[in-house]
Each structure stands twice: as structure tokens, then as C-alpha cells.
Image (cartoon, rainbow, N blue to C red):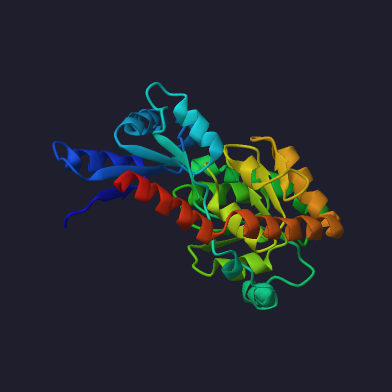
Length: 292
């Protein structure tokens, strides 16, 4: 098909593309790195991390989704000299702002108007540290018995985490929605969005929550600080600290003015710096440069 550029997005696809392109002259291999894995992030973590680092050397050019990740990649031998470009994610921010759907979504979930909702959307996997979120929510629930935790998504750890919720005595207050495609509607129903990850590149789910004008509590890992300015467009807490996560959630639940201000500023920041139009323009620039 006279393909001039092949764009891959994961260690496995990078490896498959490199094998397919071996011995060929012409197609340029561009890869986007969405996360630099660490051994603790997943099952068989050390093996996957070694594969992840090996595949950094296979493409002709790399795009990192955060400035911090760009610096981390360029620190590896032979990966400097213009081989890495930082392109932060972008989103159609308007499509995630759906305040008019708040009440209908809550009614569908059986949540009353006076119940605060803490939410999460994404994969239910080890790196996301939803065990930490459940532990912190138990502390929140002790002070706000009507609070509810909505976990949107699927993953291999869901049965284990459901058992943890039962052990903590909070199963009645945790709603597992499974995989959903109506994320803007679900975000509209939430009061506080949380991202307790142990590692991140630049989390799209946080950007979506910010676009929805939701105050976010997130761990200060990866490129999170490029999305969130602490105390201005969200609250950052240390990774692995359930007490700090709970304290930040409670602060937002109990200070409506603070939550409203942070949500408003988060939406403004997302629209101004993380638009889909800007991301497309940045990728087009890289494509044109590599092809010419």
C-alpha cells in the first residue's frame, strides 16, 4: 500500500512492527509511549519492564505523552539527539461537560441528591491502586455515611477488590458499573474525581474529569503535575498514602467553595492547554517532519 509511516502505541505493537519492517527500506516507524512501566505495575512486571525498555530502541522516532517521560527516555543511552518528541494528550473538552445529565444519572444509579459521589474511571489493574482508593473511602464513609464510591471500568483485579470492599464493610456504598461508554454522563453525577495510581504517563481519565469541571484528587506520579497544579486545578497527594487521599477527598466534600473553584479552574486549564486540535496539530508536525 506504499505506506510511508507506521505509528505504534504499545511495547507489543512496537516489537511486531519492528519485526515486520526488518530488512525493508522506506517506511518510518513512529511510536507513542503512553507509560514507562515499572516492575511493580503489573503481573510479570520485571519481564514486561525489560521488554518496555528494549522496545524504546526499535522505532525511528518516539513520542512521549508528557514532558517528564520525555526527559526519562532521553536519559537512556542513545535516545537523545532529537529522537524523542513530547506531545501531551488532547481531548474534545466540550464533549465531557454534561451538567444537565447529573440528576438523571444519579437517579439511574439509585443515588439520592444529598449523597456525595466519589468517582474513578479506567482500568481495574494493579498500577491504578484501587485498593488504596477503597481504603481511603472507608475513612470518608465513616464521616459521611451517605457517600458513595462509583468505580467505572473493568479489569483483572475486580473480584479481588470486591472482596476487599466486603472486608472493609463498605460494599453497600460501592457501585461497580463495569465497562461504560457514557463517561461524560457518569462524570456529571460525581462530586470528586480520584486517580490513586502508582504510575502514570499523562492520564486521559483525569483530563476528562477536568474537562467536566470536576475537582480531582490524584497522586503526584508521572506527568500528573503537568495536568494539575496543586491547590489550583486539583489536589495532589503522595502515592501509596490512603490517609492523605482520604483527607484530600474530605476537604473537597466539606468545602463546596473550594471544590467549585478547583473544578472551574480545571476545566479552563484543560480547554486552554489540552485541546484535541492542539494535539492533532502537534502530531501533524511530527509526521510531516519525518516524512520529508
